[in-house]
Image (cartoon, rainbow, N blue to C red):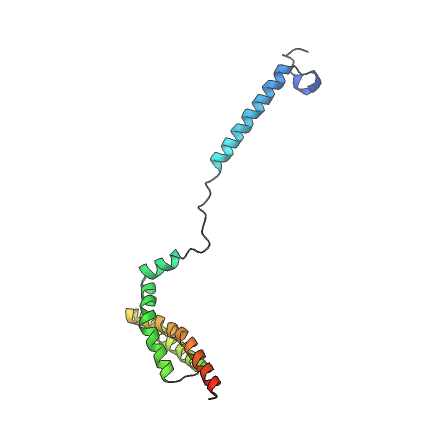
Length: 148
């Protein structure tokens, strides 16, 4: 069998040694080319996200009108609503109902007028109720402890 015989590859035990080295080298170069093409065609991995990234919240508070209104309501309307609820000595569930009604009314006004004041009040009512919850719990426990 000569090296010009077209069936040299079908008989592995009679294959000349120079052809097996050429085939191994060609297979290795094809593997390298396939890996290169796979790496070139694969898109880059997205950047890894951190688990507790709160930059979306800080960006929202700093740069949007809603976030700025929420930040201002935390120290202005929220405490005033809490003080009003506390001064009237509402039970917590009555205060929740009043807050829901106020939220609906002020929210409806805001949808109609879209003013900064109505946005501030819309955020202040639920924030004030969130402030009032611990106040109601503490004063409720104090009332129970003193027997009143």
